[in-house]
Image (cartoon, rainbow, N blue to C red; front, side, top):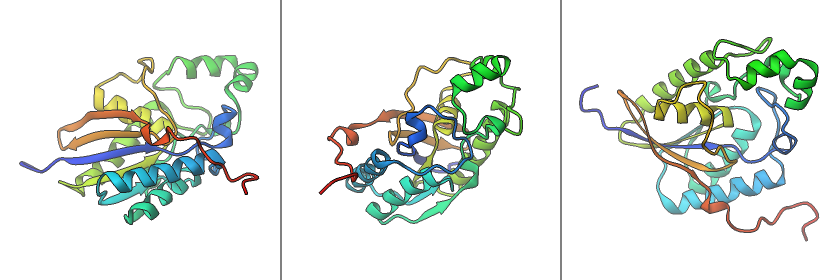
Length: 217
């Protein structure tokens, strides 16, 4: 591993879904992009095609991430591969519900979630510690295979949050003070020694006014 060239990483959260708008917990449920999300994915693909050559794209196999990654792959001509390890946190029986619903029905569960208890897992789901281990192992495996290259990882808000914490040494329980925008571009540098933050939450490619396809002529 000595002298191994670093791997440059562009980490991207998927485009918007209807459930994002409704603040509904998606987890491993397979929700497609909405019209805004499809537009965001197209703008993202066009911007990355202009900026720099990506060597390979890995994406969560969940539809919202896969659709976003496919738009980037088509715009850039970059090969795309699925990675189950990049899936969102599994929220078990909480999936499909809003936080307000969880808080009303199970206040003790909502409290442990809000406090970011690292050991707590929703029924049938993952704890933050389990998720960090999964994301760290997936990242190390994918990045180590591409020394000196630029790779794109297309995933989910929870995954972006975990990558930020891994790169900055933030504790799992530290309050989030960073953005996790849909289709934002986040830049990281990986070496066998660890992950470094290069840039975060670039949304310049989303500054245009979206032209959505519902009712468009």
